[in-house]
Length: 305
Image (tube, rainbow, N blue to C red; front, top):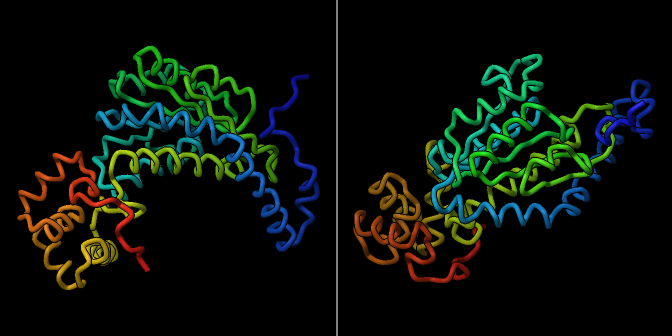
């Protein structure tokens, strides 16, 4: 009999789960979740190596493409969807593929994850090439759809990364940069939307955020490429400009209104006395890096309160 992989083994701590009170269930799940940061800590070196390898490709205009099935696929789509409002990226720069297509985001598409050929076909449909980074996500580390996508990506010269939650995962053999998160048995046996999903979400946060930071989409730890599409974000943009440019908020708001609420453009206008076009040109010459454009080290801005 084949031994169950780590994420599918029964968890002794929750063997009597159906007899527990709500307080006991919460305490048991909370205790189990402490394994997540430890699993990520153990994988830090491989996570950082994958980001370092991806950085020059992404900076040169390549895409970050997540591929997964079920919870893993939904997490990839979620991370991709959060990049445009957070970093004002074009939606085509970070892409999420899920087995079964968009329908699978809300309804289970039975059998989709078992289709290796469809994984390859979906990846090929994106015309993936040598400047792209393809991240296969599978808690079990053996999802055929994801393996098919990684094999196709490798054949097309893309950089391949695998994120799984089992040691010695089959998925790892198909990636240049395998990341294995040993999260262990779930409170609800085999339900990888729990600890495994939490760990995967955190690692995807690290990958996308680090790539955005390294490509100049922040100023220190400030989201200066935020896309101010609603009232909350316009207030945030105003505070950012006021803080970095050291002006009052009415002044910051006035300049923002004249440059389509582009935070970096507004800061350069205020710090360098440029008009909108000159500020945008200065930012372009600095590859979008605000600290370079205003010729100030990033440590010179005060922290936001």
